Image (cartoon, rainbow, N blue to C red; front, top):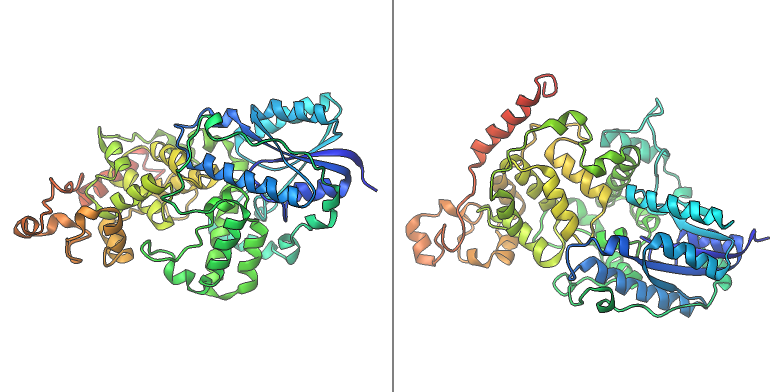
Length: 478
């Protein structure tokens, strides 16, 4: 028999009505279930501007979620306000005796959820919350000594050892869908919330579960080639599912199951990428201080980043004189997306070549990436800057020219985002300043005029960043 008469499911970063842990448990344990989503002003009001692609993606996904719930006899109540207040007020308005939601281990989200839970308990409303955004969370995968992992490869090995079909099993929401309450409310327009539309055009990304399903179906036809193709930004090699995974319009169990069942090198490599996501989420859970700008390895908080004037701005605007780095940044600025290989390269270049504090780059990505995920973004930046979880320490420094030659050999990606270099021969596209001056004049691409010269010399900067790390303390860098 159901334990609760009326329950409320609070949707957040899980915008789907299938294989949804909180929704399933609420339906199974309650006679009637209401569903709600809050456009949280505590988050929205802090965004850098009205043309935020994430808000538009969320708005379209919430619209589709409401329609899907309504087609199954349910509904979705939508509010625009401070979520910690709106959910408590809505619970009282509906007269529910329990609120269900899925975990979000962002420290700010944990504080919000704790405040909501405390306020609901005062009202006599029970709170139930569940794992849904990762396969293994928090303390589920630990070392033999019962400690959290700090290096990926041993974590991955333990993760794979712990995996069984149980953890990939979908939650059968449809089995209890008849208990959904048919209550909905109008969706506030983007304009009414202070945002503008049309920001997804450059990305060509369809929102909602239909958009996620279409991308997954397409990727599964290519997954066998993932290992070979994933590092080349000019070709269709990745899944492009990151925004859908971030906002829960696909299920992590669905993706991991597809990779596990498919087998083969491509699927195994992609599964490892999903495990990286779990790894960074458990790091954030155990070390929430990293979200406040602290290095995972505390000794590196004392690194005296030089932050040369103008370097960060040149990097942001894609005018460093290194074509693949600039093309990556222009892709990000134009579309809100950056290829994963280029995220590593651009982060390494900012920190190891330009000697700019990694926190500035982390914040820029947080403001511009449509798939921004705090755990993955923070973990990736700390990895690139050699201050985080990494088996190979500070002496890993990507060469922007050799990376370009290896992963964009014909310069196809570079030319797509740097049309001023379209006429540069393949031999010189990765380092156009080496093109003879007479040839630059002939093709109308003079370095320093049509395209900037290199802002720094990579070889010289490599020595400087090595000295920077060594200066901190010999014991740290030995």
